[in-house]
Image (cartoon, rainbow, N blue to C red):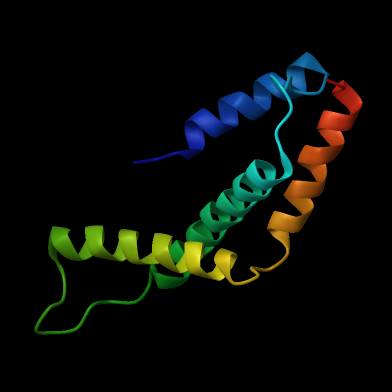
Length: 107
C-alpha cells in the first residue's frame, strides 16, 4: 500500500496554509517521544525497503507474493528496532520540533 500520497496531500495543505499545524491539546513528553520514535521507525523502514529492493530471495524459500509480504514486514521491524535502540537522530529532531510547536501555540 502506497502511503506517500496522503502524506504529500497533508504536506501540501500545511505549506499552502502558511501557518503551523494546530495541535489539539498538549502532548506530554512521553507521548511526544513515542510519536517521534514511530516517525523515525517509519522513515528507516522506507530506507531499508529501498536497500532490500535489489536483493533476490534464494531457493528453497525464495520468491512469490508471500516473500514480498514477509520482506515488507521484516523491514518495518528493522526500522522499529533501529529506532528503539537509538536510531540515527531523526526522533530527537522530531521530538524537539513537536515540543517547540506546543510552546508556540500555548495551552
